[in-house]
Each structure stands twice: as structure tokens, then as C-alpha cells.
Amino acid sequence: MLNLYVELGLLFIFFLISVILRWILHSYDLGPFTTLLNILAFIGVFIHECSHYLLCILSGVPARDFTVKYRFRGIPNPHGHVDVSKGYERITLLQSILISLAPLFLSFYLFLACLELLLYHSLLIFVSLALFFICASLVLGAAPSQADLYQIGKAFKRDRLSSLFQLAILFAVGAITWWALAFYELTIAHSLVYFAAVFIFTYLVKAGMIGISRAIDSLQHLSLSYNKNTNVKANARKKVRPSSRKKVLYDEVWW
Image (tube, rainbow, N blue to C red; front, side, top):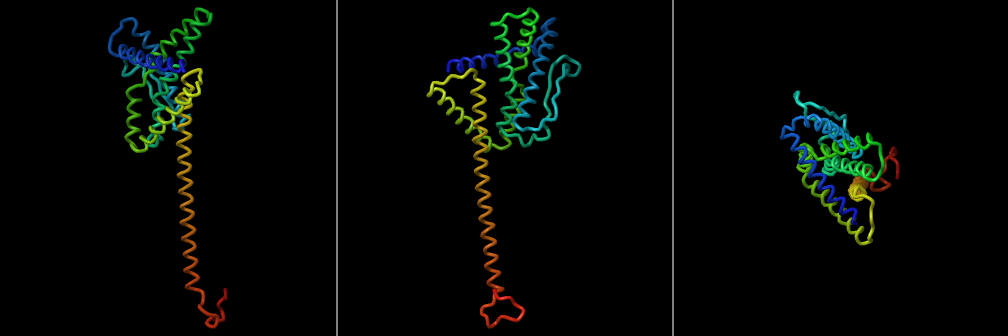
């Protein structure tokens, strides 16, 4: 469990550094360093939007395309967006959380991989410099934007009860998974495995409950249809069937 605790702490520090660096880049004129930082930020924004787009595909949200631009109104300001306007109103809270926080997690684990290569492997100087600049780009583009956090809040407000239900399942599955790891003294290689397991189990629980609900609805529908048909047949026989054999006309069928 030590690896999991350490990585969660590093993830929080990574998030804070990304937020602070982005705020400094947007708030202060850094002179000759501004162009270099904007280029690195552009690479980070590209990875950021790729993360959004990838999680849209994996979570079943129809994404048309994504755009990354270096300038905004003629001024260097790397930015981008993913077009999900087609299925926007059907995005659930869990889908919104996955899509909005994907850049933070993907950038963090890519950063760890690059840092491990830099610290524990003998590489050519050019490769080491390239990995160093990639690490800087990942830090600059990792933090969720205000638009990302806004989408989470909007998805929650769209259906509050359903969102609270999804959060309850998410926290319950997370707590049970955490307890199982601690109780059985299991260790995992990366916290990514923990988060992936939590979200997979959450979706399985949610899908299972939806399946059970639909099965119950189908059974109720079949029961109502059967009762309705039975009543119609009983009434039809009561009205059409003659009361005695003596009253049957020649062209009627005795049944």
C-alpha cells in the first residue's frame, strides 16, 4: 500500500505545480522565456486534448474532433477543445468526471514514465533533453481547466438524484476496493490500477443495477400484457359463447 499512498501524494503535488505554473504563465510577462514556455504549453495542451478525446471514445461519448491552437486573437495562448455537442445532453456525471480529469491522470503517469527513463537509464543527451522538455510540457498541460470543472458541475446539475446515486456507488466501490487491498495486504504497481479498478467496478455495478431494473420492468410488462389478454379472451367468450346448446343457431360453431 506504500506505493499507492506515495503516488496519491505525488499526484496532488503534480496537480498543484501544474496549476501554479499555468497561473504564472498567464499572469506574468516572463520576457524571453515566454515563447519557450508557450511552445512547451502547446505540446501539453495537445496531450491534454488527446486525453479528453480518448476518454470520450472509451466512455461512449460521441466526440466529433478536437482542436488545438497556438494563438488566441493573435496573441500566443495555447488552447484547445473537444467537440461533444452531438451527445452533450446525455453525458452522465461519471462520464464527465472521467473525461474532465483524464488529462491530469494521463499526464501524471506519462511524467512518471519519462522521469524513470531519465533517472534510471543511460540515454543519449538528445534523448534526455527531449524527455526533459516533454516532462515540462506534461506539467504545464496537466491541470483541468475551468471549462473542464464547469462541465462536471453542469453534468451534476442536469440530474441531481442520478448524480448523487452515481457518486454513492463510486465512493462505496472505492472504499471497498481500498479495504480489500488493506485487509488482504495486497500491493499494486501503480495507483492507476486502483483508479481503473474502481471505475470499472463502478460501471459494472451501475450496468448490473440497470440490467436488473430493465428485467423487472420487462417482467411487469409481460405480466400486465398477459393479464390484459386473458381478461379480453374471458370477456369475449362470455359474450359470444351461447348459454345452452338448444339456443345455438345453425351457422354458429359449438366450442
